[in-house]
Image 1: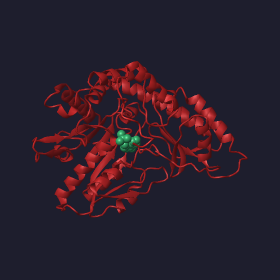
Image 2 (image 1 turned 30 degrees about the vertical axis):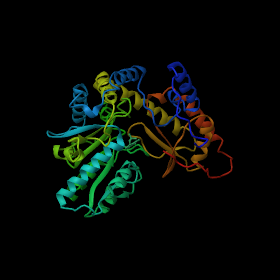
Image 3 (image 1 turned 45 degrees about the vertical axis):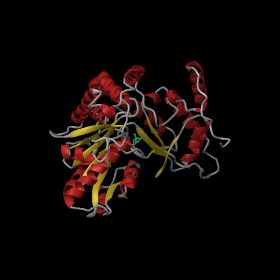
Image 4 (image 1 turned 180 degrees about the vertical axis):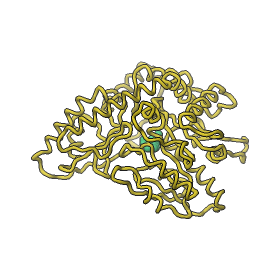
Length: 419
Ligand SMILES: Cc1ncc(COP(=O)(O)O)c(C=O)c1O
C-alpha cells in the first residue's frame, strides 16, 4: 500500500461522527452562501432551496433508468418538465425533449443527433471527418462531444459586442459541416448570439442549428416577458433544430438536471441510444448515464411547480435589478469598463489602464473566488441571488483593489484563467 492512500474504512462509524468530520472538511471550502463564488452554485431564496431539497430526498433512491417499468412517478414528472420546456421555447407540434444530468450531456446527445441526421441526409459513411462551426465563446462541452465522436471544431470570431460574427461563421461552413451553434447566452461574456441570423444561415446551408441555452434557457424568457428586451433564441426561428437548457443553473433546481429539446420526433430518436445485442435485451436511454437519480427529476418538477410563471418572473425582476446595480457599481470605479452589456446576469469587465488579473489577485487575498477570462482579460461572474447581499462588500473591495493598482508597478499578473 502507498503511504498517501486512504486505507479502506474499518466501518462502524455513526452519523454523528461522520457528520462532524464532513463538516470539518468544509473548513477550506468557499463560502458560497456568502456569495463568494462567481459560479458553480445558483440560489433564489431559502424556500425554493428547501422545496428542491425535500423533493430530491423523497425520490433519491428511485432510479430514472427504470422510469417506464418501475417508477411511473418519475416518468410522469419527467414528461411534465419536458412539456413545460416545450411551451417555454415555443416548440412546434411534433417536437420532443429529454431530461439529462447536465449541460454537457444535453449538448452531447444533441450533437449525436445532428451527426446521425446529417449522415442520413447527406449519405456520409462512418469515418468521414465532420465538423461543428461555433462561436469562439461557445462552451467546451462541444469540444468534449467532438472529442468523443471524432468531429472537428471550428471557432468563429466574435464582433465588438462579443456576439458571434454571423458572416465569419458562415464562411467557415463547408460540405462536411453538420451543425452550427449559438449560445443564449455564452458563458464568457454573458451575451446572446444573433440567433435569427444563425437560423437563416443554417437554413441556407442545410445544416443543424443548436442553441446552447444551458445557462439562460429557463430564465431568459422571463426577462423578456418582464419587458427587458432580452433577445429571443428559441424554436420561433425555423433554423433552430435543438436547444439545451439546464434546470440546475437558472432554473434554480438541484443538480444534476438539464433538458434538451428537438424540433422533431425523429431527431429525438436519433439522440437516444437503443441497443439489443446483449443477453439482457433492449436498453433505450436518452442519456449517456444509465442509472440516474429520480431525485433530480422530482426536485425539478417540484421547483417548477412551486415557482411557476409568477415565481420566475419575480426572480428575473430581482436578478435584473441586481445586475444593473453591479454594472453601475463597476462602471463607477475609475479605470474599469464592462467588456459587454450583459443580457442576463453574467458580467465580464476589465481595464485599459492596468492588468485586471492584478485586481483579481487582490480580491483573492480578500477571500473572493474570482472568475477570469483571457479573451479579453477580464473578471467574470455568473450571478444569482446569493450575490445581492454580498454586493456592497464586493464593490468596496473591488474599488480598493483597483485603487491599489494606481502608482503600482505595471506588471502582468501570473494568474491563469481557470473555469
Ligand atoms: C453556456 C454553457 N453551456 C454548457 C455548459 C455545461 O453545463 P454543465 O456544467 O451542466 O455540463 C455550461 C456550464 O456552465 C455553460 O455555461
